[in-house]
Length: 69
Image (cartoon, rainbow, N blue to C red; front, side, top):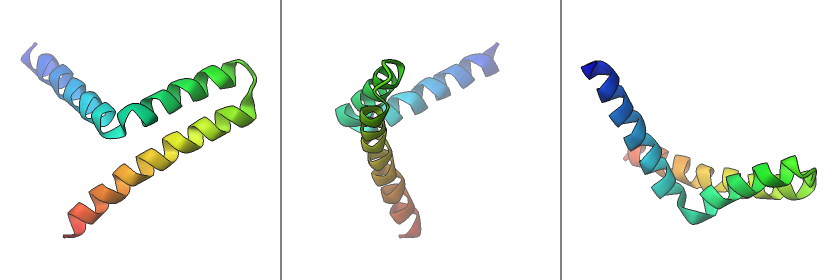
């Protein structure tokens, strides 16, 4: 029981830190991309997913630079 609770707390903490790191732009971009994809606006969904990917790339690049220093 304690392992499961610890896993849930760790998962929640990881998800929360990812959302905070992504900011409003990243979270809204993924939601908007999914909504546009469902509504068959695939080109605009691609733009939204591109914003999401570029935001995550910035986070990943900062993490790598921090590891290298």
